[in-house]
Length: 225
Image (cartoon, rainbow, N blue to C red; front, top):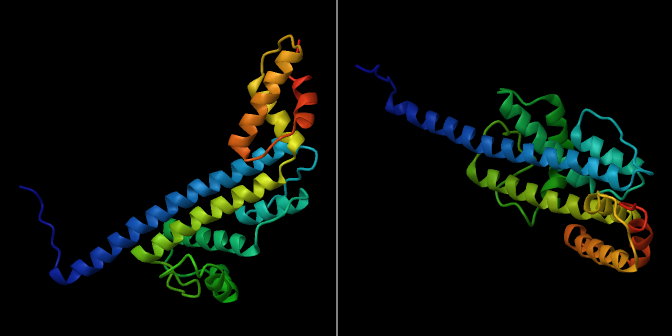
């Protein structure tokens, strides 16, 4: 005979709320994890494409490391609200994954100092999320949807900003190393085919129109016997 589960009817709402918090918290945690890997991969790509100017700035906070690295690498930076929002989501996710029962002072300070500004910044995207609320240990469906929507917008914004900072010479070199790893003999026809290929891939992957003058000297030196 199986063991009986002794649960009172009066306890069911509490169990339901806990289950809701876990479910929606898990959604946010997983989504943030994906975004964090994207940010790390973005810095690696920036290093590959702009090696001459890339300067990694170490910081324990991922979003700050990203921002400071862009600055030290002479790149344009996304609005500070994007960075603050990433920090908010990271801290909220950490409270969930570490089963925190109290809001840390660091998180409280962020909410107090930046909450109103973030509400204004994201006013067109959010419906229920309130960045000034200290009730961050539970997750409701509507605000979780808002957070996931914001993460999608953030990735799009980071992606567009990063692409605008890539050196065209660096993109041509990066793509040529990928596309022409094996040395071959080249002539005018081969060079033109390579130029056309790099132009097409550059447009598809980076949304950038690379000129023939940029690509030609690169494809004449990479993957050549």
